[in-house]
Amino acid sequence: MTITQSAESHEPVADGPRPVGRRPMGGETSEACTELLPETRRALLRRLAVGQAEGRAPSMVGAVVREGRPVWRGSRGSVEGEAPHGDVQYRIGSLTKTLVAVLVLRLRDEGLLGLDDPVGKHLKGTPVPEATIAQLLSHSSGLTAEPRGPWWERTAGELRPEPADLFDERPQRLAAGRRHHYSNPGYALLGAVVERIRGGTPWYELLRSEVLQPLGMARTTLGPQATHANGWAVHPWADALLPEPAHDTGLMAPAGQLWSTADDLCRWAAFLLRGDDRVLSASTVAEMRTPAVPPEENGWDAGFGLGIQLVRREGRRLAGHTGSMPGFLAALWTDPEEDVAAIVLANCTSGPAVSTIAAELAGIVTTYEPRIPEPWRPLSGPLDPELLALTGPWYWGANPHALRLRADRELELAPLSGSGRASRFRAEDDGTWTGLDGYYAGETLKAVRDEQGAVSHLDLGTFVFTRGPYEPSGPVPGGVDPEGWRV
Image 1 (spheres, rainbow, N blue to C red):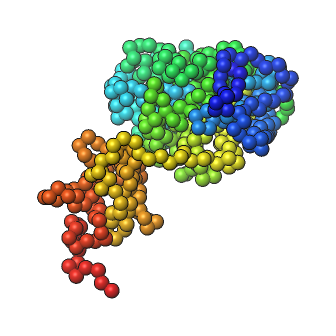
Image 2: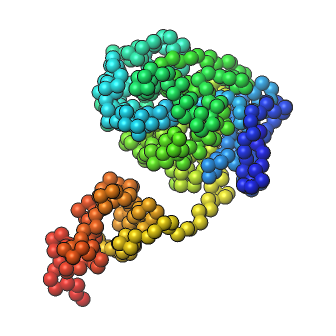
């Protein structure tokens, strides 16, 4: 697609399919809106160029999304003798899993399955009927990492025509729910579950109608469509190439079959940051980013949510996924706190550190041009005097906290002394609030009233908050020394 400037917002906007650019082999593009500073754009292009050269990739495309919009795209190397642009397809490997996870979460939000449902409830004949949907999404089912038979990524799917054909005599390698153990067959099962619940419609057809079309991702497909990159292996000791196969993997397709473009993945990154009510709400997308299993490998610097990889890089918490298939590497990382995302695609089996490159592209933008906060605005709509009266200082024992009123009757509790537990609370229909994060996630906050109807104290999961520190008249568990404070 071509990139033009919007006169109103100075953001890049798509205006239809774009032909392959007439650029010489080894050329580059650095397409950006004027929002990014020239030094930022140069730093981004240099990082991509270093990654492509050191990784010896035949071609590489990178892109950055900020505040829901693509703000930069660059490329190095060539596809069919020309510099690749944002509409050239690459295989994205296990990035496919993030899209399959969204299909599953849509079923959950529609009430058609539960995350705690055993897969056997929805899929008959599987050798692991007790594994739950949540465990499959988070790779904590203990299932084998790879399917039975020869290397599935390089062989045709006809070798495994039924779900039972994916597993050998020992499908489960670890106890379910105890550890993170990456399982490609687990996502094959999830694809089959989606098909079964949706009445037998193939999972990709569901993905196209329920997710890709609403988000405008027309170039994300099950098989390659022109223009696409060819997959290569690069000889480790010589600058020589070997073509890699690109089979239809059949039942294993939900684990890594899809082809996509940098432009489409920019749209996907924006969705993973903000959600889209046509597909999945922002709150459910945030749930996908919540750690679901204990961390593995890199200790507390890596984890997994529901279909989403989680990493910590230089103090930044990133969520997304990496992917690989024969001849291709991909990475997409989002930084929700900075509202920034980056994508890197390459057409080689190994070599470039695409995960690191994508993380550093996002880091360049946040370092060179830190996010400008949204302007403060007053609450809209009528103000409830009783709710306003709850705000202000409250004390857990002698520890001062502040209770603040936010939009939609949401409350926020935070310590004032530098120590203590903070949380946000969602208003419920029964007059209570439910914790959304931190220690109090899921806990109930209640305003307890006395016989006269005045608020006596706050009850937060049995913790009592009073208007003064250890007030003698307050309902403090265990009571307060009758002589009170002293010197």
